[in-house]
Image (cartoon, rainbow, N blue to C red; front, side, top):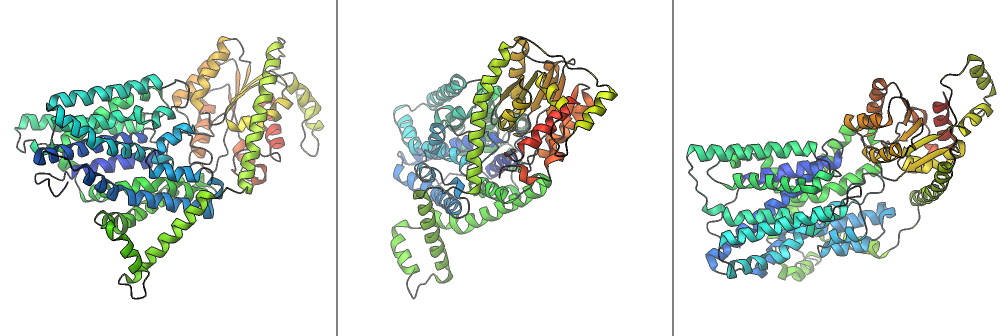
Length: 628
C-alpha cells in the first residue's frame, strides 16, 4: 500500500500521541492507584489505529479504484506478528523454566493470542483486569491487541463495501458514527454496577467504539486533502481545541478510575471523543499540534511503542516476583523496570521488528537451511536461530505440560481452601448472630484494679487472659475486610462469637461503603467496627470521610493496617491510615505491619496472608487492640 500511495504523508505528531498513550499505560501498571486513569492510553491507540488504517485504505481506493486486501493482510502480519509471537513464546518459555505455578491454560493462552481472540478467552474465563493482587498473568494486557487484530481482519472488507456501494463520505461517516454509538450503548447496557467490569472492558463489541470513531474521522478529515495554509483564526481555533483536548486527556489519566461506574456509563466514550479531537488537530497540516508533539524523544518512544506495550507487563510481573520487598523502594524498582522495558523494546525494534517487516518469507526455508549449514553466510547470526529454536521447544513443552505443585502453589491452594471454608462458616455464624437480639455493653474504661488483674493473668506464652476471653465473647463486633480478614475470620469469630464478618477476596476500600450503608439501614451495625482493608490498594480522603461519616462518631472503629511488601502501595496505605487516626477521634489503627513485618514465618508464601502459624498471633494482637 505504501508504495502506491504517492500523496501519503507520515504524521510525526502521532509518535507523540503513541508516547502519551504508552506512558499512561505503563504508569498505570506500575502505580495503578497513582495514575488511576492510565488505562485510558488504550483508547488512544484504538483511535489512532482506526484513523490511520481507514485513511490509508481510502487513499488506496481513491488512487487505484481498488483495495489489495491480501497485500494489506501480509503487511499487517509482518508488522505485528513477529514481536507478538516472540513475546508470547519467550514469556511461555520463561514460565516453563522459572514460573511453573503459572503454567495453567498456557496452551490456550498461546493459541488464542496467535488467532487474536485472547480477549474473549479472558471473558470466558472471568479474568479480571483490575485485580492487582495475587498471581497475575503476564499476558493480561494482550486483550487490546486481539481487538486490533480482529479489526484488521474485517476492516478492509468493510471499507471496500462502503466505498463501492455508498460513495458519499458523509453517509459513511454517519454509518460509522452510529455503529460507535451502538458499541458505547452496549457497554452501558452490559455493565453491571457493583460487579467487576472486566466483561465490558475486554469485549470487542463494547470497546470497538474507539476504533470506529477514529475510522469515522478519516472519511471527513483525510490527511492528504487538508489545507496546509490556514488563516490565523482557524489555525488558532484548531490549536486551542487540540491543546484543550490534550490537557483534558492528561487530567483524566489522573482522575478517572477503571472501577468507577462513570467510566462505563459514557466516560470512556467521552475520552475517545477527546482522542479523536486530538488526532484530528495533529493530522491537520495547517495547525501547530503536529509540531508540538514532534521531538526526538517522542519519535524514539513512539516508534517503539508497540514493543514497549508488548513487553512491559511480563517484565513487570517477572521482575516483581523476584523482588521480596518492592514496597521498600517503589520508585527505584519502577525505574529499573522502565529501563528494562526500554532496552528490550529497542532490541526488539532494531533486530526483530524492522528487519522482519521487509523480510521475504518465501525464502524462509532457504534461510533456515543456510543458517545451519557449515559454510553459512549468516555468521554469528546463527545464534539467533539456535535461540529461537530453544524458545519454541521450551514454550511448546510448557504448553503441553501440567504445572507441578510447588511450595508456592501448595500454599496458594491451601489459602484458597481456608478462605472458602471460612466464608461458609462466617455465613452460618452471621446468621446465628442475627437471631441473637441481645447486645452486650462494652465498658468505656477499665479500672486500675481490673487492668492490673488482667496484666497478672497474662500467661508466659502470650495467650489471652480469662477476662479478655470473657469480654470478647460478650462483645458484638462488625468486621468488614478483604482476603486477609477472610483468611482470619474463623480465628476472629472463635474469639468473638458475636462478630459479624463480611470479607471478600480482592475488595477495595471504597467497596465498604454499600456494605456499611446496608448495615446501617437495617440497624445491624454494632458499636464496635473492625475494618481490614487496604491490601488491594490505597484509598482517597473522600473514601475515608464517607466511611467514617457512615459509621458515625459514636461507634469505635478499629482499622488493621497492611503488611503487603510485594506491592508499592503498602507504605502509602499505612501512612494514610496514620493520618486518618489523627483526624478521627473514634478511629484506632491496629499496627499489624510493625508487629508482623519481621516474622515471615507467620505468613503464606505470598508474604501477606497469615498462615496457620501466624493466625494465632494475628488474632491475639487484634483482640487486645480492640479490648484496650
